[in-house]
Amino acid sequence: MRYRRSALVVVSLLASCSSPGDPGSMETSESSLAGSWEYCTRTAVSTGVTPVEPEPYIRAMAGSGGGLIFPSDDGVRGREPWVSSGSQGVGTRLLKDINPGAQGSDPAQFVQVGERVFFAATDPVAGRELFVSDGTLAGTRRVADIWPGALGSFPEELFAYQGLVYFAAGSPNHGRELWRSDGTPAGTVLVADLDPGVEDTSPGAFTLGGDGALYFLAHLRGTFTLLMRFETGSSPTEVYRAPSDPGIRAPLVPVGDKLFFITGDTHDDVVALMVSDSGATPAMVGMFGEVGEMAGVGTQLLFSATPEVGSDDMELWRSNGTMAGTVLVEDIRPGPQGSRPGSFTVLGNQLFFAADDGFNGREPWDSDGTAAKTRLFGNLQPGGGSSNPEALTTIEDHFFFRVDILSRGVEPWVSDGVRVTTVALTEPSPGPQSSNPRGFVRAGNDVFFTATNASGVRRLYALPFRPEGTCPP
Image 1 (spheres, rainbow, N blue to C red):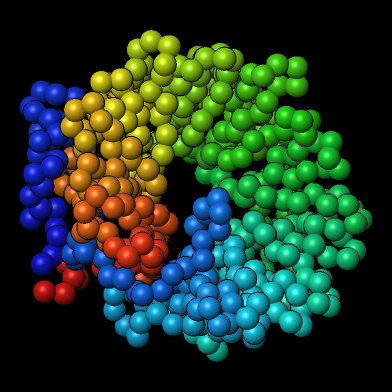
Image 2: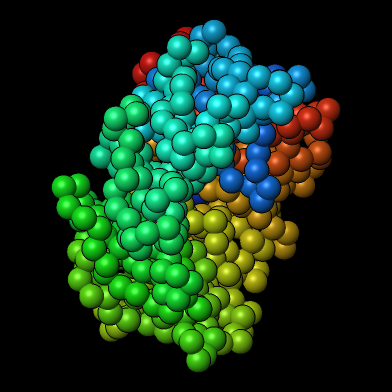
């Protein structure tokens, strides 16, 4: 059965969440998001394989032309790259035994660049270096031996930009600096030695700016943190520097041609919200006790913050890049406690997030950056309890997430941004035992995630997810 928006009905759980006129009423939704993808079923298929997931958890898989590439350990060959075609195709299998033996190559830092995936792995000849794969055995290989010999350059912070991968890597003559690669030895080159010689600047926090430039942070001899801007055909330029303590905090968040970021204050515990317009000298647009998550929505930044040091009153704020335009959106939980907005994801021109208004518990909310349209999206756990939505992840014109429901536990859900068509997926672990899904990512015609099954074993799951009208009957 196909699960188109027009065919979906409200599950009984959601139908009981609110009544007409309530802030979370299903009938009050004004979302008109247009989309072109659909999930073909609400039941994800287990691949039977357990991926290796870093602790603390970082999504460790990416899509290639040949399927999802991820690390796994079969208990014999150690941690090696695997590939899965998901719910269709040839299945899930070892991609390549890069480092034969029980130790494995420990692949990590997966990033998709076009139809290929770049990652770091260790082989017995070159040590830890950059690898690339198109999802086939023949197309999986070491790219270059950046640090000659068995030591390795330890590539990290891999980031896709204009069809190439940019990353930090070490070399004998330059220290740990900015590199890029097209997947060939000749096309793997040092971009810039930001601190000439063997000193490291360890670039990271790579971000694609709305002006088309690549922004990142670099560290100068433990003294300064630098905000850098790079465009193809030129050298990286310094936009701003701050003392390393407290430095510039990741992430860097683009909103149109503006880039927002947070710096600390050397003498106080306050933090400053800064903005740079197309690489111009940054300006301070607000000072706060604490800043939480940030996201660009339309032409403005939405973020969670407390107004002063020591305050627990974290609420939703917005900024258009000026001091006058940096204001509180809505006091969702009046009083000193704060609703603590978090788990941000953006779908269309709406921010979806988790917050606690002090009455409905911690539930999903949405906002367009105005008080009038900042509202409870759905009380998924009616009463004073909380569904605690987490891991909100936008994929095409849907977002996937997990919620905790009494008698069901923590299980996967999906939404197209409309309240009535926000539904639970079939539980990988039926009953009150939680499957704790995480790591939602699309590869081909599936959304993959990991979850714990009824036996308590974490597995990789694939949910058929296709352009609208292409699901099989």
